[in-house]
Length: 474
Image 1 (cartoon, rainbow, N blue to C red):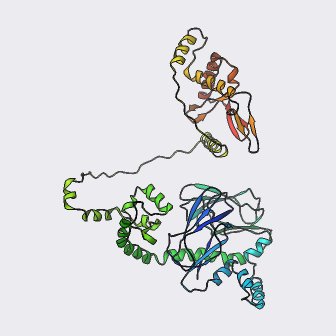
Image 2 (image 1 turned 45 degrees about the vertical axis):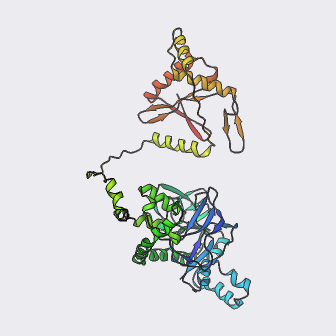
Image 3 (image 1 turned 90 degrees about the horizontal axis):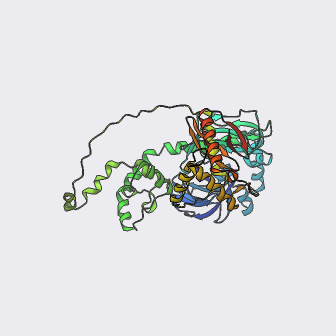
């Protein structure tokens, strides 16, 4: 049966994508790893690759159109294959026959009656009744499947649209998956510890008592088929790669100096330290794709050197590198609660507020002379750090546009200046705040910072909340 291509969820905030450009047209041959289209998300323009070999039989989205996540975009199958059954199974092809007047009304009635006899309605019919299908999102550009690390809800639990349903382990990190729906958790499709393909059904949320067997009958098949399709022709794909590898270098040398490779292949090659110029591409036009990087063996590299002139070989002898066998050893230590909070607050600060960076070189000769004169009469010893705190406070007072806070729908211009001083302790990093630093003398600031330091080492800090971020106060 033909394979249906749906709009993937390319970021955790993505609800739809704009089809910027098609790289294939109906009738074109498609290989696994070929770029089908470019999709504009809410964060970037990304390549959408095919995971199947075959012929592009159907394109349901025009360039420039916005497509919701999980909506049908195209169909890939065998040349001349009837793809209408695949569209009907996804609920995308039921409207087309009516528009062209090809399907009689009696067939429509049979199709409408079929789900009822099968014990459940289709996904589109249940969506109208408030049922939401939760699919495995694409949480990174290299992700093909995710492992359910933990379920936070069980079947029968009430779910709100901002509740975290599960923790998912990807190839890069463990991330939270939210339901974005309100209702009862009707079905869990993947048990804890099991993997699910991207876009595979992992849960269903809707009104209590709703029959979702119609969705399960149509939604579980593509996942199983994707697994079997990926495993069955494995040997055939490797043979194809080997055959294409012999001819690819010729095409590569005749093209421009830029290596043709998919973004995913470039990233994997960079992570593995593989030189793309040594990899033979198996996709159209000698383009390097993911499986070429995975199948690349460094031992094949010397074969190219054999074709080099003899004089070039003798001119530079390869250095002899001794063999070294290492043993992987490590120890693990549980993360303290303080470090967890520090990491969380730093991430909140980075991703929820606009950032920009300025670099200025300052001649500190006068500051050094001033510090010597101040310490000759000051009741406490003033450090360069104290001078920097005072200078920053005065500068912020003179530039209110910089001394401001982002509030989402408004900007708060502060008329006072509070300076956070980072202090390293054994368990992490504390940031006590010198409040109203612009009005305090250098001696006052020095004494206050020294007091903060003593309390930080003695772990006598208390924590207060200010807005969405935590600051440490002593």
